[in-house]
Image (cartoon, rainbow over all chains, first blue to last red; front, side, top):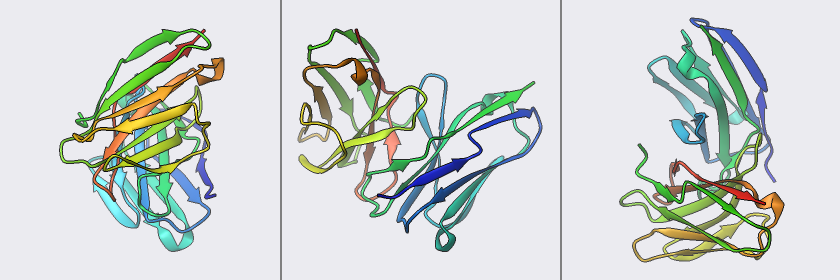
Length: 109
Length: 111
């Protein structure tokens, strides 16, 4: 089956710093989503981005489908950005997402 | 707020018991997917229901079963609970095909 690798596994930042999270996947996909999991376990949708570039405030994402990777950019990080960021993909856009292992981000004041 | 609600939020069971978890999907969504997330891991796909029929299953034994109702709400049932079933169970709804939206999860502890 398709493999999803996220890097780095852990990241510690000072408030105000910028960061880039990467997601590599081993096969072509029709769905790619980025999520932020808060300390209570809720997965919060960040981007639905099987290809192209999107921006939402301080966050933006780019997926290069032909090269099988996606990047999540966080600018001017805040302590509330802390948590685990997951990339998830689906080959057939049917809702059977395959998740990476996540990147755990800690933003220090 | 995703519009996806799950119940109960927390529960404790003992080995061998059975558990039922419930999920109400976002209005207008016809597809419900269930995921299991063990501590420190990414969520793992259990199964999906589309218009009341099972539409794909991950690598989980038959003691994990489900239902989807005409209003598109769903249940996940787990029989003969094992210690390794302790996890966060996440429900997601979508308009097939499309973006998934997750509920807050049900945290199951098996003693």
